[in-house]
Image (cartoon, rainbow, N blue to C red; front, side, top):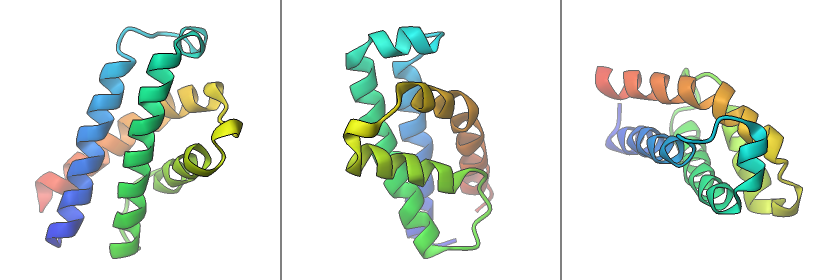
Length: 112
C-alpha cells in the first residue's frame, strides 16, 4: 500500500472519529435536525471524508471498502447540492454506514 493510500485511510478514520464526536449526545434524527451547528460541522467532516474516499478510489479502484461510493455520493451532494441536503438521509448515513467505513479503513491501515 502506498504512502498516499495510507494517508487517505488515516484521514477517513480520524475525520469519522471527529464527526462521531460531534453527534455523541444526539440520539435521534429530530435532535440532529434541530442542531444547525452540529449539522454544519458534520457536513464539513463529510466533505473531508468523501474527498479522501474519492482520492483513495482513484489511487486504488480495487480497494474493498463497503459503502465507499455512497459516502462519495453524499459528499458530492453536500459540496455541490448544498440546498438539497436531507438531514434525515445524512443522519441515516452517519448511523448506517460510517461505523463500517471506519472499521474497514482502520483494518486496512493496520494491516499494511
